Amino acid sequence: MHPLQCILQTQRWGPLASVSWLLLRTCRACSSVPSTACPSVEKQQEDGVRKDFSSRLASGPTFQHFLRGTSAPQEKPDMEDPPPYLTVDELLGKQRKVYLETYGCQMNVNDTEIAWSVLQKSGYLRTRNLQEADVILLVTCSIREKAEQTIWNRLHQLKALKTKRLRSRVPLRIGILGCMAERLKEEILNREKMVDILAGPDAYRDLPRLLAVADSGQQAANVLLSLDETYADVMPVQTSPSATSAFVSIMRGCDNMCSYCIVPFTRGRERSRPVASILEEVRKLSEQGLKEVTLLGQNVNSFRDSSEVQFNNAVSTNLSRGFSTNYKPKQGGLRFAHLLDQVSRVDPEMRIRFTSPHPKDFPDEVLQLIDERDNICKQIHLPAQSGSSRVLEAMRRGYSREAYMELIHHIRESIPGVSLSSDFIAGFCGETEEDHLQTVSLLREVQYNMGFLFAYSMRQKTRAYHRLKDDVPEEVKSRRLEELITVFREEATKANMASVGCTQLVLVEGHSKRSASDLCGRNDGNLKVIFPDVEMEDVNNSEVRVRAQPGDYVLVKITSTSSQTLKGHVLCRTTLKDSSAYC
Ligand code: 5AD
Ligand code: SF4
Image (cartoon, rainbow, N blue to C red):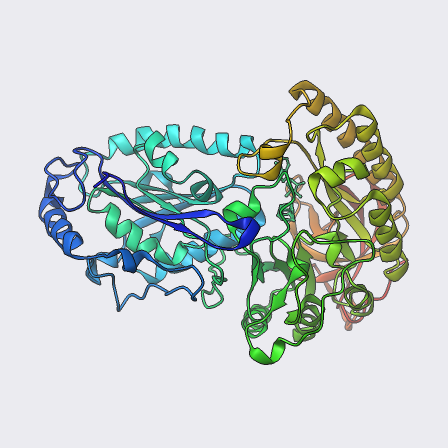
């Protein structure tokens, strides 16, 4: 048997066919296969446990045991029903302390909460102090090369910590979670022998088992991608609790296969969480007094709850005009407009946002709803990626510059005063100076309020990696990126200038980081608003003067702006329903 005992699975879903792994590695010290006892140890006391484990492992898991997560719904590990080679006791955390570190996007912040929720149930404790951790888990990102390099650097720092703990009674375990685990799989275990466990984005329920296997001196990994895992029943534990807002994951994965993007390979197929479970979470957050919910997903507006037979009619999907998909048209299911409608009805005082959408999924019913409903923020992220139709085609975005611009006009007509943001990539394969100037002109034409701009980073496995040439020199990418950032800032400053003199509804978050005498909050467009912390009138009780608290809505008269922030003075405390004071 190869020392790397692994089960390879090929998921059969057409263009996304990818290989998923679930593997158990041998002891690093002696390279023995799991069916033999391991003599060399980090810790003498573990010997007995390990021998016992090894013999149980030999008679334990079969090939069939590891075969899950393909077409049938995934079997969820159950604390009362451990795998045959582990006891319930071994799955328990026994108050060991876990330190979680998050990199990358908001989905990863949410995933950290899910991973922690699973471990907490298993008897682990949480620590914010790296030095006292028994388990360190890094929730990683693979979207660009730089994101991965940050993790490799971090692992080198953690090496010293692990070596120091080698002789301790409780050894330190290190785990890589998320996209990097999924993308690199056993390459991480080979490159960094100090990594004990790998868990891909769909394997967080398996963390107690993976850590139990690691306790026996074996490296363990579960990087299976699932077709149905949404962690719908795992209530995330807020890692950085905020008095005002929370993120609620509504879908996972992406079917779009933009040619530059690694996400479909690291996070797998698109799947949506059932509406009922989303509403339950939003209700709970409203009962806790939260005032803002951001619906979260890689492709949030492609939401499609097909969990009940009666949802699955033959109604085909309306796309934005002039947009197409890289996949076969889908039918039926409860769509994003339905979800948005339901979520916004839970609590009229709760602001609703969503991120990150794809421009193709903005049918009129979604735009109308955003316009009509007071508590759905008039803010849309519309990732353009490029202003050149030629580059957009190479990126396989499914639209031209013209179709994108038509959508922008349509959105601005449908939702007056809407705030727009976008993502752009500088220096994609084959991008000429003329293409770049097209992006510059799109930035000028649209005048976004917010922007996220990146230099192109070639990722293995993607279509661009296989079919295109990463032929824009790094210094040209950097120069173009700088130019895009400058133009974006100039235009955003102009766009924000239009707010000067207006009265805006601001949800207070707390004191400004720069000055304790100022408060900071967000307007409907999600821009930061800073204003002095002074007493004010309460519109519902004119007899008292109040100071605004986190979670309060206040009206602020805007007096000055920059490309990122607005400043003003506060007029009164109010409610979302009572305020219609936009200009
Ligand atoms: N290189 C640079 N930027 C990328 N993005 C996605 N993949 C890459 C890549 N390979 C950007 C896109 C996307 C955002 C989340 O990250 O702009 O919208
Ligand atoms: Fe990546 Fe495109 Fe999917 Fe966004 S829509 S996650 S850019 S493949």
